[in-house]
Each structure stands twice: as structure tokens, then as C-alpha cells.
Image (cartoon, rainbow, N blue to C red):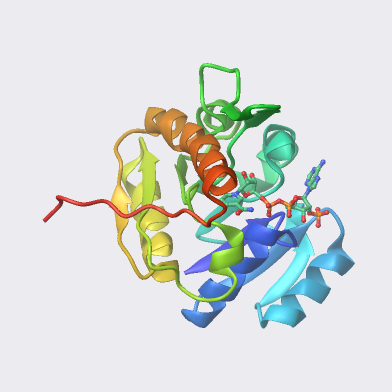
Length: 206
Ligand SMILES: NC(=O)c1ccc[n+]([C@@H]2O[C@H](COP(=O)([O-])OP(=O)(O)OC[C@H]3O[C@@H](n4cnc5c(N)ncnc54)[C@H](OP(=O)(O)O)[C@@H]3O)[C@@H](O)[C@H]2O)c1
């Protein structure tokens, strides 16, 4: 699979790139700064690095992995370059208070709002996967992927299955991203409260 990772210079995007390169995928690192993308691509043995707008051209799947605050603006800026290419949204909007993290205040997920901007189908997933663990191997965890377009979701599930030791699980339509993004706040609070590195394992499935 040929995958572009927008914001692939960051903690999550770069860790994902390492796992996908390990799995034999052709990965293009995207950044606002082409030189930084090229440098990071060399570091992890990716096929290439380029400015986000170039990186997303002629790939099978684009992972939108900028900081969550920049996800919608970045999707808007890339509309033409993306064309009909499927997008995987991994972002979770969080609000931080003295008592912990909360899901973002918008009723709709970032993934649903991204879908309103771009022409291609958007899937969402991998929210529960910590960059710190992903950077060091395939975490022994399950991951969720949701989406309304069967082909885009299948691509995202295929990608997800390569980067974890657990299962890549089809979690239903894109509206499920509201729960998946919200769960990030829960995981952040668990990590803080229990001083750990929480991940998800689903029981009871065949
Ligand atoms: N960290 C995790 O454990 C984790 C787990 C699951 C999902 N996620 C999701 O993955 C995404 C990335 O998280 P992260 O921890 O990797 O973030 P990060 O390292 O702080 O940033 C990722 C990249 O975003 C780009 N960026 C920063 N500001 C930007 C802007 N204003 N416009 C466009 N691009 C900008 C930067 O790339 P350039 O400067 O090179 O352009 C940066 O390297 C988030 O949406 C997060 O919710 C994170």
C-alpha cells in the first residue's frame, strides 16, 4: 500500500511510518516543511518526504496526522491535492481542565467534520494507540476503525492490522468517531490517574 502521512514528522505520524515501513509499505512523510519531511523520511527509511500538498498525490490512503487543532484547516488546504483519495483521520479534539481531559465540545467528531470538507471518503481510527508505544514495536492492543465508505474503511483496517499485534476492529459508521475520539480523553485520564500507558483489548468477540 502507498500511504502518505500528513504531519508525518510528529510523534504519532512518525511512529506510524516506522511500523508501516517495517511492514513493507511505501510511505511518504508529509510536512509543512519539505526539508523536514525529507529528513524524517531518511531517518525512518520511508520512500520519500515532501510538503503535505505533494505528499498526498498518487497514494492509496492519506493519514491525516497533524496536531488535532490543525486537522480541519489542513484538510481544507489540501482539498485539491487530495481529490478523491481516501483519508484516515486519527485526531481527537480534547479540552484540558484542572480535573482532567474532556472530549471536544463539538457534537460531531473531527472525522465527520473532515468528511464535510474533502471529496474522498474519510475513515477514522487508531485513536487509542499511543505514539510512544507504536514507536517501539507493534503494541499488544486492539484498534478501532470506523467509516461510512466500505472501501476506505477496508484500507484503513488493512493499515491498522499491520501496526498492532492485536486486532483491527470494524467499529461501524463514521459517526462512531465521536466515541473513539472521546475515548482518547478517557485514556489520557487513566494514564494520569494510574500513572500508566493504557491501551485497549476487546473481549468477547469470536
Ligand atoms: N500522540 C499520540 O499518542 C496519538 C495517538 C493517537 C492519535 N493521535 C493523533 O495524531 C495526531 C498527531 O499527534 P502527535 O502527538 O503526533 O502531534 P505532534 O507531534 O504535536 O504534531 C504532529 C505534526 O503536526 C504538524 N503541525 C503542527 N502544527 C500544525 C499546523 N498549525 N498546521 C499543520 N500542521 C501542523 C507538525 O508537522 P510539521 O511541522 O512538520 O508540518 C507536527 O509534526 C493528533 O491529531 C492526535 O490526536 C496521537
